[in-house]
Image 1 (cartoon, helix red, strand yellow):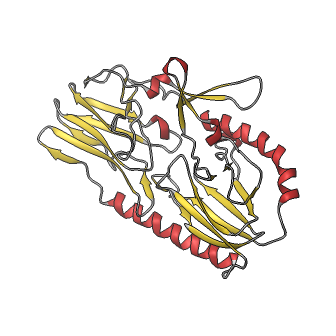
Image 2 (image 1 turned 120 degrees about the vertical axis):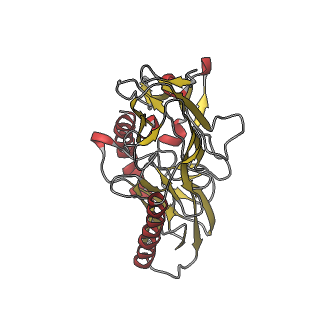
Image 3 (image 1 turned 30 degrees about the horizontal axis):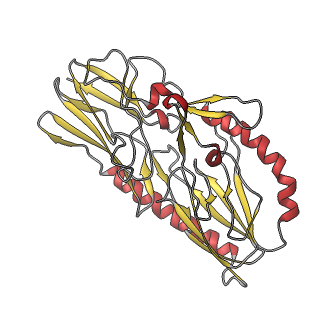
Length: 332
């Protein structure tokens, strides 16, 4: 639902921008940059731009081809936060991150944002184009996964490469990143010390991938074992959520407004942790949002539960339900 609603709004907003975009784009060449990627089952995702640096000429257009849930933001040094806290402690996603901002030309000044791609029933191939009108080197970022997920456009009077060669390079780099993630997932194991098990939630900034799974197989533990999930990925946020047989709640609760896009409320039931220290298979136990290791020290990055009863317990990352990030613990 969260991504479907965002997708519908984007379709409407982008339609209103298309005419102006065509009028302002020049007659130069168009260069393609890939935003993300991943395996078919989305267990491994690429949180990178391919290629990270692209060289173009003044008047040329860069087209970002989205293959994941990202955005492209040229911040000109004024990067907006992805999350805002409003009245009553309620947490919202920033509309300046999730919806398009700015015209489709760029000279190194002002804020430009692609918005995020449609997902769910409204899903379709999503691209974002920006025409560069002044020579310079311009940094950009995916605010959802940055600052680790960043890129650069170098604008010269003349470009030395070709769009075809750049796209070929991009595909090769993307494939290498996905292979690196698959290799890491193939040898992944949680760590054990007596009746304590640690499940790292992993990604690799240097290689550019994240693993959107908990453990390759059901995690088998004994009654009385404490399992700790710990963030080891500087790209993503996650939750660890035991539902007691209920369906996963929505992560985002859109709040329609009379004008403009809806406000995107993070579901308080998901964003906030429960007080559970033990779990016996009934009720709701939730970590709240777990943040990357590089996030401020005040933000939670780990969650522990001690299992008190035999059984088979499923749990979810509510952020990544669409990607199938579900785990199983078998208590024996």
